[in-house]
View 1: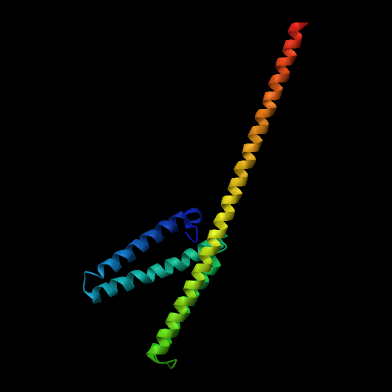
View 2 (view 1 turned 135 degrees about the horizontal axis):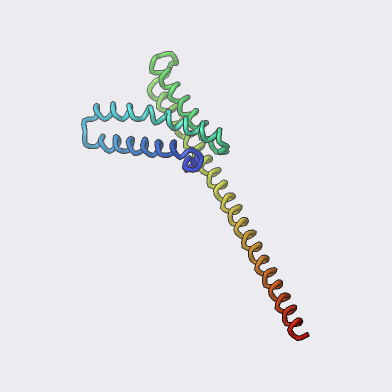
Length: 168
């Protein structure tokens, strides 16, 4: 909904819905299957989903969606937080588990805030589009009424002219 893929890229929209359904299924299976098997399935399903989300953002940005740039920046924040966590995990950046969890939480918070801004922009653009559509409908209705009034006046003039000729 944020990227309006249904209108800009319907095939990509269908793939996004399928990917979300598969991740939902994997999350549901985590409740009933052994944790290790579900983790592998969830990780295997989430990596293509991440790539698909970024690709959707790029497609939407190239097709003129104004909120797609912010959407892509939220994914950039997420990838930066993950990269910092990986560097900490490999020991390249010093830090304990507390610092790592704080970085990840701060990254998630910032991503959440950016997504809220994206959603607000999308809502505002939907309102503007709705207002433009309403104005276009009103303009078309006014044109139709004016056309009917002109037709009515022409019909009255024709009737008056005919009556005048009959009277002569």
